[in-house]
Length: 176
Image 1 (cartoon, rainbow, N blue to C red):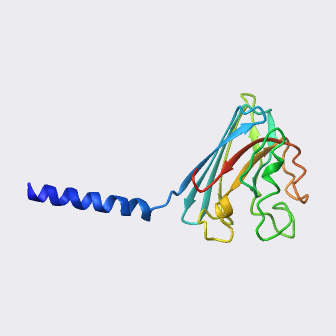
Image 2 (tube, one colour):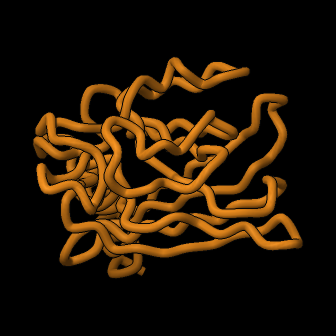
Image 3 (cartoon, rainbow, N blue to C red):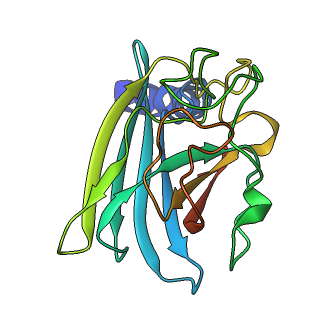
């Protein structure tokens, strides 16, 4: 009986310390369109060499859509312009085909939404971080947002890749 009491006491003391020592390593962003309807999710998960990103789109027009990480953790409809420009802490140009480098908010490919109005893509990005203290952290300064655009990103035209209007948006904060 004494052993059980000691073990229980130790576990009650250790549990809060373990919870504080292990910050969340997965963040899920809910995307909404201008009417506030569900447009999918984007999941960010810390990996050994970067951040795994899984984009799941739904209820959007058929075709290729650019998805970008934007600088501000704001998504005010109808145009989502409060999300500001792309996350770009190193003030680079836009697009993976741009010789001047790419924004940290640029994703390496577009997401295709098919006839069922669903689309999915996964990436591992080694140029962003989920560590709020890192200079390339998408969680620093209150967070960022994820925006889905009406057209495909051409991967080279600064500042937006000619991706068109913003169709959906979701906020990423340290509390997600």
